[in-house]
Image 1 (cartoon, one colour):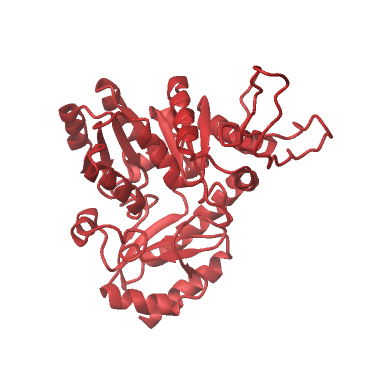
Image 2 (cartoon, one colour):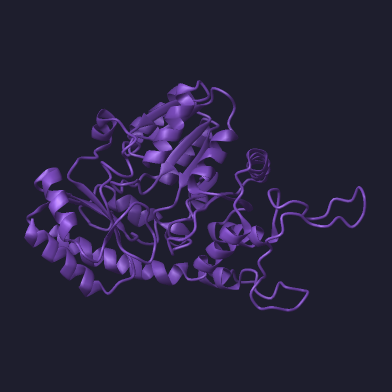
Length: 384
């Protein structure tokens, strides 16, 4: 039988599963506990922290789309990252990108300071140096974030995964920036895929959630054990809302990318912009890798304004159709200053090493009219 496509999986997940009343849309199971048929006979569901049918519909859909054997839905994206960290042994070595998301950097740095894990931040864009580091320290886990936040650096998942296998290391990939529509790391050799479902998968900026998906049954058992053990599992209502967002993900990603490409073109031709970071640009350092392993270039990009922080403040004061806020992936366009917002936890030295300057601006393009967004950018740039 021919495998159905991702948008069909998302549209059909859980449909017609209600055996009691025959509702087309799967019901929301808010119950914290479930009835035992008899003493000593464990039912499929007993307590919602351990398992819930609403949460499982989302988990199964994401697992099928990503090409995994199963998934765990968590209460946030950071909960999903923490879950992966907790399946590791004490003092295990972990390699991470030097330019990863600020929350990821803070979590693993904190675990290092507590003596829980041995952490190494490196520039994974240098493939040979990355492979050398893997061979040198034999890490338990290699954490990839591709494209990275906020500079959109893309790393070669397949090549790094091959090196990881030789070192008996796990590969976990944060796939939040692209969603399962535009990239499937498990098919490129990764062991675990992590999402902040808060972002594109939910897509409406009204639910916090996360997911960890794997193609390894033993890893899935570990993930589920520790999610239950630590109380990291997502709520049924949040899972229900996120599933609603997943159903339109493919359609939304098309518009997000269309708007991003249009805005990137405008910024690339403006003299007040020093540099634009978007893998869809042919001259972007990661363009060839992105083209090889992604199904598109996504709706996220960053750019450097000439004039540094004063120019950024003036630009933000003039912009009208972009909300100055953290997060990304919603239907609304967002603009962000990574130096003081998403990456504020990093020290000035760490920001410099990651390439995050005071003049850097990050945009998550929404679903607004393309011309309106272009006009807004042009007017704001003129006022600097």
